[in-house]
Image 1 (tube, rainbow, N blue to C red):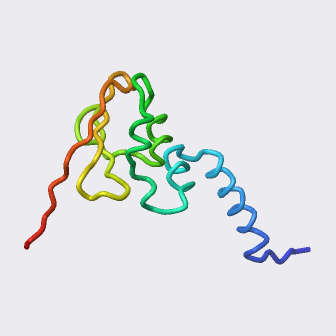
Image 2: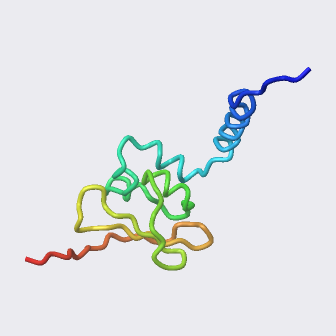
Image 3: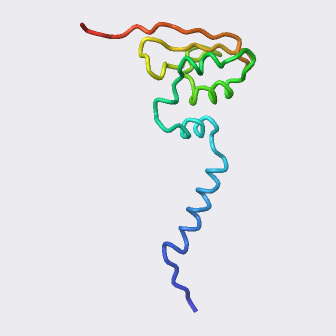
Length: 112
């Protein structure tokens, strides 16, 4: 007696199982960024910047900002401002602890 297996009966359970495993093994930074209502919220603003305190871990800073910074040097990350295109935030770490932060001016590339 032979059974007729359809695509759904064989592959659908495998697909669902794979999706469940991927959700359980998620990237915490990606989860933080995807929880934002808008794409630009993964950047930082001055209110979030002022909440950053020494000894915070990188992931704590990511949570405060709503997204990951761009690594610019060893242990140094940059977040663009959410609104102002003329400033950005530099955050420095040592042994995964915040040791310094600064606001920098960003020069534009205007052809005027």
